[in-house]
Image (cartoon, rainbow, N blue to C red; front, top):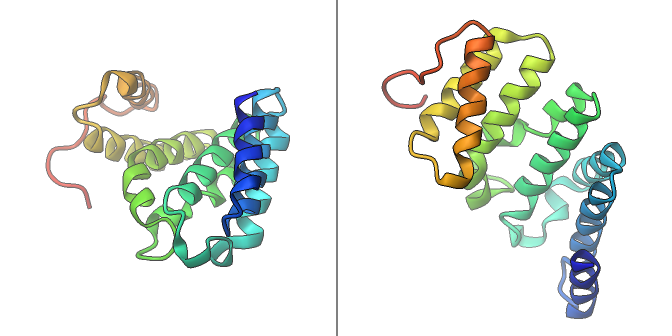
Length: 170
């Protein structure tokens, strides 16, 4: 119900990114009714189709990284590790779409990359992403503590220590 209201409000706003918001919210709606794969594929297709032109004047600095992170999670949950990984490469780019949102979500994207690499059978790469995540999340909020525990447990399961490396991030 809240998504339907948000979609109506977006359409009524007349904003230049109305179509983008509507399609994004439609994908989230699909996820909420249990169509995880369809939601991930719809959001991924929207991202891949539109890329830079999709974000007029780069006004939506948080929408792109949020959309890609959500689509990546949904595709991985549906068994599409390759599609999931493809949606996470924006983290490595300097500049471009994402801006502030990229910085805010870099840790969560790293955690998702670790999950993807673990699913792809790449334990060494997964361990490195888990370690970087733990370095970024050295003081998690209560809402994110379960993510830190997940990363520590995954590191132990993958044959690494459950502590992040000492020092700065690369």
